[in-house]
Length: 258
Ligand SMILES: [Zn+2]
View 1 (cartoon, rainbow, N blue to C red):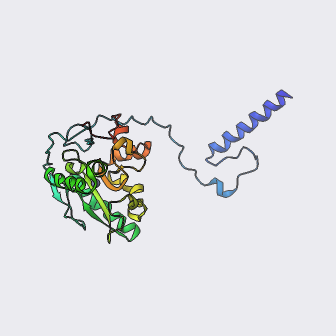
View 2 (view 1 turned 120 degrees about the vertical axis):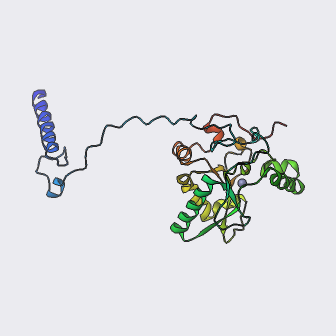
View 3 (view 1 turned 90 degrees about the vertical axis):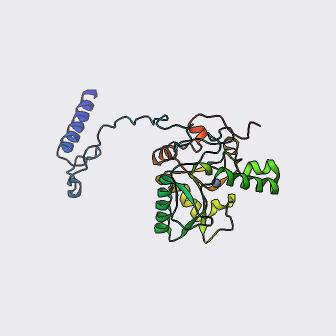
């Protein structure tokens, strides 16, 4: 019985090998000739997978204000605090306040807005992009006046601590403007949903996810897009790590040190 079984197995294996050698697809359940459609040339054999190179987390600085990976939060101010990027340019997209960004981020925004329009027939505009130290000072003071310092700190960065001062961040709005402009409910707009799914392919991340306030120190900002480059944005998308703090193993920054 065992010998007969072995012979049967060997016969099946032989026939599988024989069919495979003819380039046909193979069914182990049947010895009958393959249907004609199955004899079409099969795709090339899957090559042996090469090990995925480990993502190099030190390829760019997270400390240098000029780095596209710079991590700025309530515990990591820009250095110097009145940093101003050297390569700011006007961004040729519709806007509420005329936007400037660093060259590389500006190019990416133009491409992202164009792709969104091509895919959906809808439009986006820039609400706010680069803000200088001085501008951020007045923005923050405005929030302090209306919300008090504690409320302001949940909504707006203190000067020297804002991603908008890097020239790599943009608050995106719908065009025409959404009732949820700069609000968490912007997440429900087609613009935000498209960006959440696609912005990484242009090098942007949603910097302040709704479930990460204890880490980023900010409430959900589905409109605040931060340019980090396609390589890092894709790696974060692939790994599902949504904050720069977690990705780089940095301390959570729920609040200022003082
Ligand atoms: Zn913002």
